Picture 1 (cartoon, rainbow, N blue to C red):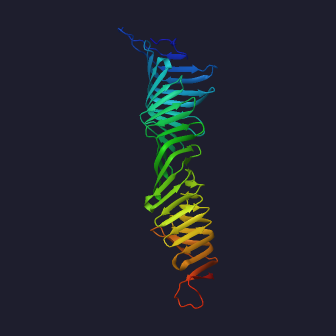
Picture 2 (cartoon, rainbow, N blue to C red):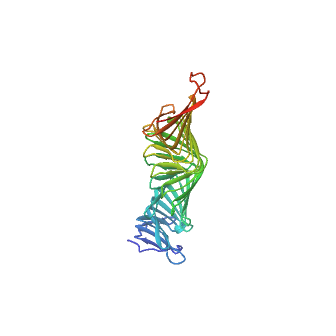
Picture 3 (tube, rainbow, N blue to C red):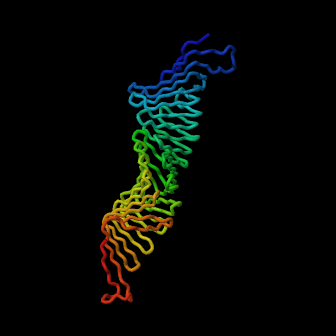
Length: 382
């Protein structure tokens, strides 16, 4: 015989329990009821839906106020509208919805244009408190960015996820990035995140190889897909014998760029480089110094308004008020543009472009030139 729909009086929300199948024999303690469906709903103080849980099948222990259910589904509301969708393989509902233990693959999805997904193998959900505790491989993702950790706490009231226990930020784009941190806070509505360092990680590009990134902390936004590394920032490229030390640095994951609007210094083999800002472009495999470029290597020093280096072709270009000084014979070359090519040891050999070049050189003493003193500079225009 199928029992009628039952209502548990202790629930603050309506509990619909349909299809009860009573046991045929009496036991010393009342056996759990088996129901064909379980629905728990709760409203807020204004009468709007707050949360709900459903399951196609549940076993309910009336004395312990405990329900064991499978294929749980849930919704969490904000201002009467569904904001999060919850699903789990199985779960235990304690005290008529006061605590919900979700187990197996559990998924929490924020509804909207840029869905944020939170997942774990075990979640302890406190619906009335608006809080979830996640462990056993918790992670969160939005677009290409993923955050993993050993532990996570999600606060629905603040719409904030906090990750601790060796959190790691992962970008699975063309230039794969993995950053380890100490603690991370992630605001689901805005996409803003704050990461407590030290930040250590790697970034791998096909042409440039693996880069090591170091920073005290970071901030960013998962919707805009950008990260901001706090100063001082160090980028090391072992395969190119290169390193860069900068101040606050931005990583644009969509455009595949690393940039800073503040002065920096760097090196590549024997070459030392500095400038007022820089932009490392992964798509065009080019380092651009848009202002205050200075390159120096043993015997040479070049200054220019701007410089660029393509690490795929090893072509180097300096433009705008270019001056190249060579110690040998005191040679000074000035031009609007000079082109060069980077060697494997990091040095750059510059060649004459198709424009006008002015060169001065010093004639050393004892050269046999009469009427000129040692160290006289002769200008030559090409």
